Structures are given as structure tokens and as C-alpha cells.
Image (cartoon, rainbow, N blue to C red; front, side, top):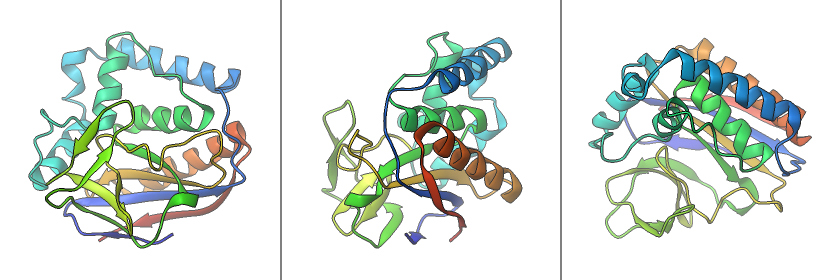
Length: 217
């Protein structure tokens, strides 16, 4: 699935997979999540999260979009703060948990979407006046001016918080995963993150990666 970029200062890592089997997290992934969370908690305090180079780069990217990252916190930063507080990662499903694990490893926002319900074309853009969606675990989110992924039916995802329309459920079989990386991020690092994500989907959710791509404006 092609994705167009209209916002400055960003590039996307895209992983598509089929034959996904969404289930509870398995022991191998749970141990990996715990190991990475414990290491990061030892290495940083909550106050130090915003000083991490990837987090600073993402904050700079948000400001280039006219979005205050202190008010609308990037999802990776929110997860890292949770880890630094000793709360660990949420346990949602094998797919979502693999997504969140990659996010705290890189410091970049990640999104996972049910590809089967998307209506191309897909664009990363600023939301228009009046655009909204039902956020996961939240009420209606008013989106104007915020970064969103949108298809022909409207916005469905964001590097802040995603929608219920395209959320991962037990019925999901086709997956679109997106890494929102600053344009300054090395291509090699983004490629490594995409490959690692694809392998985790294959290993932990029986998925078959069908496309891995770096998308630039």
C-alpha cells in the first residue's frame, strides 16, 4: 500500500504482513519486553526521557508541524515515560506488544493498523478543521492541525494516538505497520527497525511479511 507524505521533516518505515494471527502475548515476547523495559529503566529517569536523542528529534519534527509535543506527547515518548516510571509496557496482544517494543527501542512513534479496512490512497498530512475520530481508549479526538494518517474515509492513525476504526483485533489478518521517524534518522537504523519488526511479527504472530519499504516525501 503506497503512502504519500505531505508533512515536512519525516520519513516512514512501512511493514505490511498477511496471515496474521492476533493473540495474547507469548512467553518469548513477554520476556523480551521485560528485558528491554528493565534495561531502559536502569538507564534513565522520567526526567531524562526528553533528553534522549531520538525523542528530541521527534519533538523537533512535531514542532516543524506546528504541534506542541509537551501538549500532544508523541506515543514513543509516552511509552518511554511509562517504562521509566517502572510501570512497564502495556500487554495488549502479540502484534501491538511487538509494535510497542520496537517503539521504546528506537524512541520513534510506531503505529499498527488493520490493512483490510483501509481505503487507499493513504496520506500523512495535517488534519483539517472538523476532522475527528474515536481514539483507542479515549473519547472522540478532535484532530485539526495534528499529524494524521488518512485514507479515502478520513483520518485513522497518528504518531500520538490511533483510532478504533483500524485498531488491531482478533479478526485482523492483514497488517500495516508504520514507523514515524524524523528525516534526520539514518536510513540504516530505520531499515534495521523495519526488519526487526517484520521478524517479530513472523515469530510471534505467524505473520508473512509481504512488503518492507522506506517512504520519503
